[in-house]
Length: 333
Image 1 (cartoon, rainbow, N blue to C red):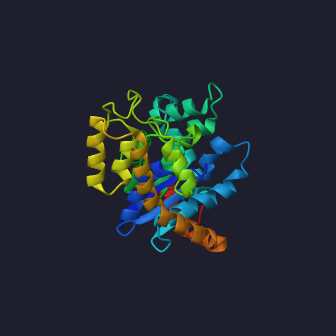
Image 2: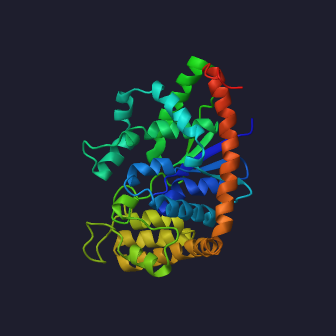
Image 3: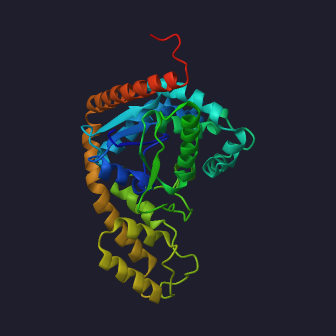
């Protein structure tokens, strides 16, 4: 069997640098080696937008633009829209019988996202079922590898458990996937939070224009214990230097800034200015490619439709095997 990747994003808005270091960079790097499916998980995004589902149409297009802008090739990668593959919903229902409520309640990723969204006791059932839906996404494409951010590791482990239980009950039909973490396990938010998150408003987006990028960088948190530029500063745990390590290819410059910062010989303004320049060099070609695709919306739509068509063919083939293994093909030709 050809080695396959399945990963994706909920279209709750444009993608940011956290997405890039967590998963996008690996997707681009591995697209030549793996049969790659990238899922735009619009059904899962309804957990955030069930009162305004009309937002999804715009967001699906925006996420596809980000994929193409960072270098995912439509010749190599299949961009698949989740809601256009009904077999995913069918497999999700089957998987619901393989997971207990207690297991879902223990999932740390779900618990954290519920906290961020301030659901309280009004958590939609669809949100609790998110790990099961994600497991179906991965399993239906028989993915061997799933590039994800560190925060998604519990979700992948949940998928592995479901696949093992399915294969034990019904036979070796599905593939138990492995997770692939980005070189930067977790990119902090510009506000110093542990994670960059759209809901927290602490992101730098892939499509940010230079003036917006500069504003975001110059407002970033640094070392809260450092009052004056002449005070010795902390580099470890300092978000600005985390970003330098991730996006500034001039390691000599970064090392020199770190040394001066520790010795109190450079201010936050200069460190941030150097970071802005490095990020602008990184984002400028992405922004240019994104604009070129944005000017051709029909071409982008065709890329999405063709990727979805090919992705559904794979899903249909898997579900034929699943139904046969579960003895659920009794009324099918």
